[in-house]
Image 1 (cartoon, one colour):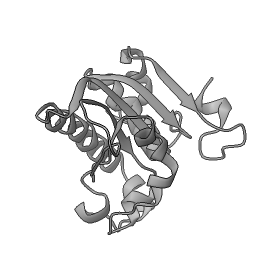
Image 2 (cartoon, rainbow, N blue to C red):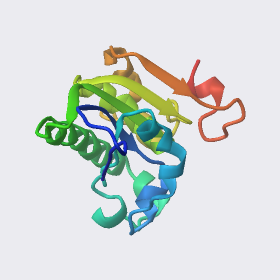
Image 3 (cartoon, helix red, strand yellow):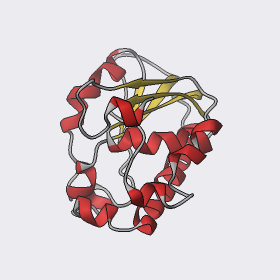
Image 4 (tube, rainbow, N blue to C red):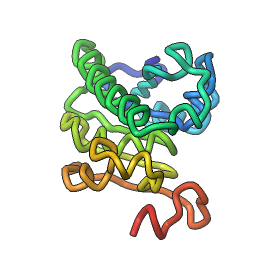
Amino acid sequence: HVYLPEGKTGPFPAVIFFPGMDCLMNKEYNTTYLDAVDFVVQSGRALVFPEYKGTYTRGGGKTIATFLSSPQGARDFLTGAIKEVGRTIDYLSERPDMDTPKVCYMGLSLGAGAGQYALAVEKRLTTGILISGGLRASKNFISNPATNATNFLPRITQPVILISGKYDYTFPVESSQK
């Protein structure tokens, strides 16, 4: 899904959005997040909201336990998501209304977690915005080198802002940011 500023002509810098964990549980595309990220389009940028494999109409309806049940499940999902971010940039580069040298990644919660990997691997992303995310302490992430974020974080060279709350119980400041 690509949302463009109304009444303006491109090329537009693009922001690729990755939503929270509920995208895995819902079988239908959910526009609820658009209210939270509408400032992207209002600022003159294109908001790109892919339906990643395993989410919404592309295999959603799973439980959180299914996603976190094994190191392989987390690895497969993250690997697929990173590839799809790359494919999304490929798609945007074919559109004359997109300014592909200026592609930002914005992730919320699960999307912020996936952003750590996407920003390390996909160098066409020029900036990152990670909201309510951080390092995942789950043993299924840490035990597998392919999903252990500490193996990826040193490879992030783009400017990134991490926005999270002091009382976030999923990604506490002590274990996620320090």
